[in-house]
Length: 450
Image 1 (spheres, rainbow, N blue to C red):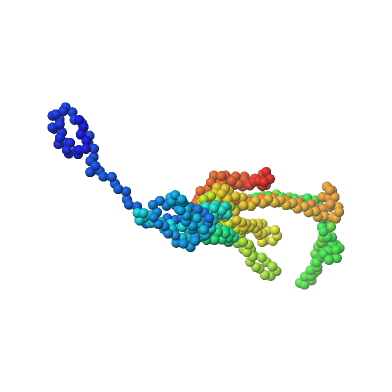
Image 2: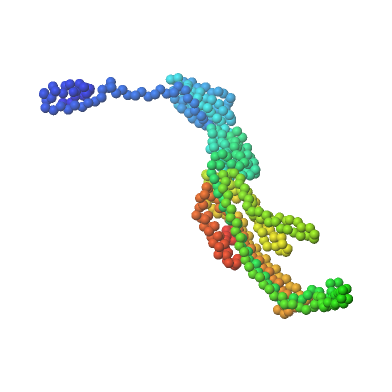
C-alpha cells in the first residue's frame, strides 16, 4: 500500500493503525505543493540603455518584437526601416554623428539606443592604425565607444610628430595621447643597460742601415769648423788654450733599433633607469700637465673617461627595446712629443631597436697602418738591398681593433644568449697576447655577404 500527497506528520499518525491491518506499509513522502512554490522570475527592468556603433552606409538590425512605439531624435543621422514581417528594425547609417532611438514595448518597458555613426568602420580603422604604428616601441591602441586613442610615449620629436599625423588621418575617430618620454605606467619597469668598450692595440717598428749626417760643416757656411777657446788668468797672468773640436763631422753611424709591444683596454659601465626615463653616466677625470713656453709656465688639462646619455623604452607587448644613445669615450695615450699626453676619443650618437635578450655590437672598427721612411744619401740609399749601406730604413706598423657591446635587460635578469656573447669577448680580452689577427671579438662579415 502506498500513500501519496500527505505530509510527514499525518503519515506518522496513521502508522500504528495501518501496521495492525497489513503486515507491511510503504510510505512515499512527496512535498506538498503548498510547501514548495516555484520562484517567480524577477521583473524585467523598466528602462535600460544600450550603445550601438556603425559606419556610414553600414546596416544593423535590432529586434522589433512586442514594440508598441518607437521614436528617433531625427537629424537624419540614421534611417530606420521595419521588415515586412514586423519582427526587426533595419538601421542604416546616413552621416557621421550621434543620435538616440527609443523603443517602447507593450508591457511599458523602454529601451534607449545611443547610436554613433562614424565615417569608417571601427574594426577597419583599428587594423590600419595597427599597421601604421607597427614597429614603434611603446605605442598601443585603446578603443572607447566609437573612438580610438593612441597611447604611450616616444623617444624623439620626429616620432611624436609622425603619430600626430597618423591620428589626423582619421578626424573625429582617432586621437593621439602620445607624449615625449614615458607615461607613469611605464616607469614601473626598470631597465638595466650594460656597456663594454674593448680595444686591442699592437705596434711594431724597426730602424736599420747606416745613418749619414744631413749636413757637413758649420751651421752657416757649410764648411768644417774648428772651435777653440782661450782663457786668461789675471792673477797668474797666464793664458790657457782649450782643446779644439770639430763640429758636424762627416762620419756615418750605425742605425739599428726595433720596438714591439701591445696593449688592451676595457671600459665597462652599467646604467639602471626607469622605462622611458633619460639617464646620464659620467666617469673619469682630467690630467693636469705643466707646459713651459719660454719664461712662462701654463697648466694644461687633458680630460679622460666615459660620458653617456641613454633613454631606453621597453614595449611589453612585443618585448622590444628602443634606445637613444649618446656616448663619448676619451682615453689617454702616451705623448707623441713632449710631456703632454695625447687623447683618443670615440663618439657614438644613435637610435637602436632590438629584442629583449639580444646583444648588440654597436660599433666595430679595425685599422692597420704601415709607415716606411728612408733617410740617407740621395739615390744611393734607394738601391735595393745595398741601399742600407747608404741610408737608414725605418718601418712602423700599427694594428687596432675596438668594439662596443650593449646588453639591455629588464630589472637585473640577463638572458643566457647575451651573456655568451660577452663571455666570448672577455675571454678574447683575457687571452690576448699581442696577435690582433687571432682576435674574433665580433663577427666582421656582414650577414648579407655570407
